[in-house]
Length: 434
Image 1 (cartoon, rainbow, N blue to C red):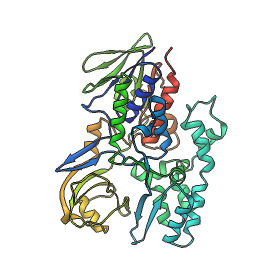
Image 2 (cartoon, one colour):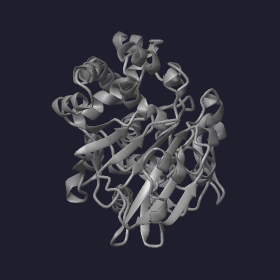
Image 3 (spheres, rainbow, N blue to C red):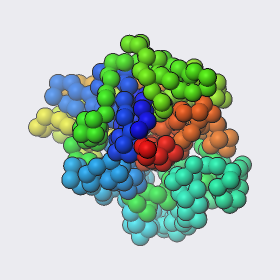
């Protein structure tokens, strides 16, 4: 049995700790904040409650596998339900498209409704990633990226210089289709010019698997995992800041914290590795993706009814998520802002056709800097700076023996499904207790 210390209590840390405890290791989790969950959290004011992180996830099988491999099946604890409509895109010319997931046919119909002929264009674009997805899933998402085991096809794909921006300019003359396809990367804080073209498979994943949510908020996922750690007798140290990994003769012996050392044999870094001096020089060429401007709105009265996420495209790209909890007769929206946002976010929404200013009851604004300071890093993970970003991220192993990496800043990247996969890779790399 190894003593494993997981640094960071976000989704990556929770998932890693749960898997490793089930494998028989003695696990300690160290978290700087008083609560677990990282971006899987909520915030409340005047009876309104908003999720502070993601409200949906792709690839539900990742979450199901996590629960199965760490104890009880997911369905015994949480309801993970498909979202009928992933999002609605509203464009500057007044047109819009409502994007469902989980089926080629429904997406074809949605784009045909936008304009005749666009259905085939969109579906052909999505289908072009089917082979890429199969390759990436097998050799990148589900096992470590190693020269001796990674196929030559995947190595060629990852070395490709083509960007999402170039692929979209070549594929679509209609700027609206380019905006829909580039949206996940823009929301994540990336410039499509620096994102590899194969990452366009995000559209394929949405179409094939759909988006999923937990009624009542994704924070329930955090609560279920925290309970799982208690069941697995994971030692949890909150309000404890890890400052570095202590090495002796090249071997891990402890994690240094502001409360004293935690003796350990193995470390899982589930925070931004730049925060640990032992890892910082190995990721010096990476940068964090900056979070968006966030505004949580508590509203009442006769407001527009939004059944799903709405994206307002323009100089400033605004994403409106209506799924918060509110008192009777009210609504809780979260607005994420990207681009040239030179005015108050409510005024920007009104200028783009969604005016709720007179219905405002309360609001909480969080700047990118405030979010990064609160979480001591960016929940958006590592910024795409071209094809080299794939190899400049660490994980599941790191160049420091006995130190592994999971979470948004590790391989394979940010977002619930990919962070969940990073934890699975770490658990496989460490293996069962002996």
